[in-house]
Image (cartoon, rainbow, N blue to C red):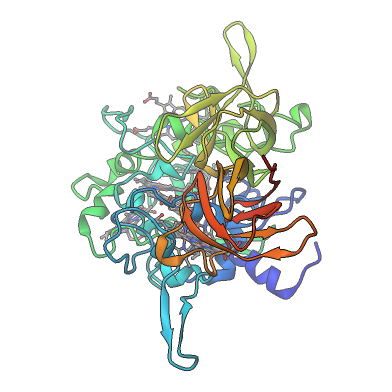
Length: 485
Ligand code: HEC
Ligand code: HEC
Ligand code: HEC
Ligand code: HEC
Ligand code: HEC
Ligand code: HEC
Ligand code: HEC
Ligand code: HEC
């Protein structure tokens, strides 16, 4: 891979991993960085760093930043929210909630506050807390809102209560480990240089503590710790998120030539996950001679790395492709091999989730047709296999801008349609990227004054009756010829 120094620096921080790479960290530590989020710290980011993920097709989605903000217009203000600033008593998001105007004495005029620097509005605490973990969702322990590879800490799930024994995994420092130090998470997950990506992988306390969870609120320490547990049961506090059912279903595809294109638990090369090989079982349980089928293993957790399309338009169907890992996997049941497959679940900010069946699905890619009935808004896109849900990636469904009727009565025109976007009256469409342009039959511009503007109707008074009008809103443009009656 050839790239600029800046890309390499970003890559070292964020690991934008190319599709084909030879993974050099076998055996660990540190582990490979194929799955999930790089085992790093993200609390000293700058705006370009934010865009690496929020516009990168391999991680979240390209180019949806303006849209996903604008889809919040008229939606209730989030309290607390990840971008606290003066919202001057509004109860819903309006243009001016985000695009505030400040007096510029040099030009004696109002100018918009910066609206491209993410960190002007969103907050992080340098060296201590990242932007995502200061959100209401993270504070409410809703880790599953974004993360895939864990059980939901808010939903009760199986955590053993039997007495710990020689085979009980420890987070670290197991006093009676296996011959090579097996029996603890740190046997594989520990600080070190990942040679394939150049990333300095952090220790587990490093990755977890650098989220900032627990900072300034000791109750949050209990998300991950139960300081009253004896050492041999410390893992049980971790099992709130890393329970048996999730740990026994984490597996990347290894280059094993017997099944190169899919994941088959028990038949993968060692150290590509948790259930690929007997050696992996021993890594946690610290004992030679475990059987190859781990209880609750079957639906290996899917992970979505990106979508082919950033946004779709409401009212039209769209075909989109998701890339990732473990969309399907093989499991050997009592009656032979079964292929487990996934569905797509789209969850809107408010409203009920929509389930879709992919038209094409392989282990690392799927294609799905989005129905035209999806309402405009921000959606979380997840791949769900049996009871295992992936991480969330973002999909914007934007309103279609369309003029459905124009009535002109003398100099007054009334345009009806969709997607004009309710712009705050104080803004008067000025500098907002929204507006109305009218021309006469010879193409000459006609001056019009907008007298009313809602999401579905615009009224204006023009100098003379125009022939063609073009409406521009944050969702695009629509041009219509006026039929004279
Ligand atoms: C390592 C990749 C990565 C980086 C870097 C990153 N983000 Fe994110 N961000 C994500 C993912 C993944 C999500 C969850 C899926 C989604 O909503 O897109 C997310 C979600 C969010 C959310 C939604 C929070 C909520 O309540 O749902 C905000 C706000 C956000 N990011 C802001 C930022 C800002 C600001 C920066 C820069 C300081 C940044 N992000 C850097 C990956 C990243
Ligand atoms: C929740 C905050 C928020 C609200 C509400 C909001 N905007 Fe924005 N707007 C943004 C951000 C953030 C950007 C910059 C995105 C970027 O740089 O990628 C932006 C960019 C823009 C742009 C530049 C277009 C572009 O593609 O970068 C225009 C024009 C705009 N907004 C108009 C509006 C209008 C009109 C409204 C009300 C209908 C509105 N915005 C409401 C946050 C918001
Ligand atoms: C002018 C202020 C402002 C700026 C600049 C801004 N945001 Fe936001 N952003 C907001 C507000 C307000 C919200 C809604 C509150 C929330 O989600 O906590 C929001 C929400 C979001 C969301 C979640 C939207 C959803 O799906 O519900 C993401 C992701 C996000 N911002 C990322 C970014 C990134 C990346 C940048 C920089 C390119 C950025 N923002 C710049 C104000 C801003
Ligand atoms: C709004 C989306 C979001 C929520 C909610 C969220 N995270 Fe994260 N998390 C991210 C993103 C994006 C990253 C990478 C960038 C960063 O650290 O901010 C991350 C990184 C991490 C990391 C370090 C990366 C790694 O692989 O080790 C840990 C640990 C983590 N989160 C734990 C949690 C826990 C625990 C919760 C719930 C209490 C939680 N997160 C809630 C989005 C989220
Ligand atoms: C035998 C080695 C080994 C041991 C021991 C081990 N893991 Fe893993 N784990 C891996 C590998 C390999 C991956 C895949 C990493 C990748 O490619 O991103 C992984 C991935 C994960 C992931 C999901 C992806 C990520 O990096 O966030 C979680 C969560 C995880 N392990 C938790 C644990 C916990 C908790 C323990 C201790 C109970 C543990 N692991 C012990 C090898 C191990
Ligand atoms: C998101 C989960 C998480 C949160 C929240 C969290 N920790 Fe930890 N902590 C960990 C992990 C993981 C380790 C590493 C355990 C190991 O390897 O034995 C750790 C290790 C520790 C250690 C052992 C020393 C070290 O650094 O390795 C102490 C002490 C500790 N945490 C205290 C706290 C306190 C106090 C808080 C609240 C301010 C807190 N933790 C919040 C996950 C968390
Ligand atoms: C409140 C939920 C939560 C608890 C409790 C928790 N973790 Fe995690 N852990 C996470 C999340 C989220 C990730 C990141 C998964 C991803 O990449 O999306 C993670 C990742 C990991 C990984 C994979 C390497 C990495 O950093 O990504 C290990 C190992 C791990 N945790 C160990 C522990 C240990 C040991 C404990 C107990 C001391 C613990 N965790 C407690 C949420 C939690
Ligand atoms: C990432 C660490 C990890 C790996 C790898 C792992 N396990 Fe486990 N396993 C656990 C944890 C944690 C428990 C719960 C232990 C406890 O709380 O006492 C568990 C529990 C079990 C149990 C007891 C089941 C129950 O319902 O309580 C069996 C049997 C088991 N594992 C077998 C296996 C086999 C076989 C493999 C390899 C295919 C394997 N494990 C791989 C972490 C792991």
